[in-house]
Image (cartoon, rainbow, N blue to C red; front, side, top):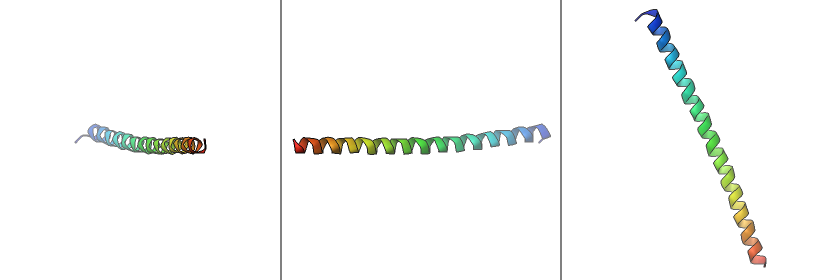
Length: 55
């Protein structure tokens, strides 16, 4: 393997590892946002149900 091939391989592996770690962070953010939104929606439904009961 020539020097250039090794450098190119190392750069490709580094790029792949950075992309995978970025995707992982993005996925965690999506899961957290979805969880927060579901909790808020649940609170709204509960409050609406309580309001209907009291009327």
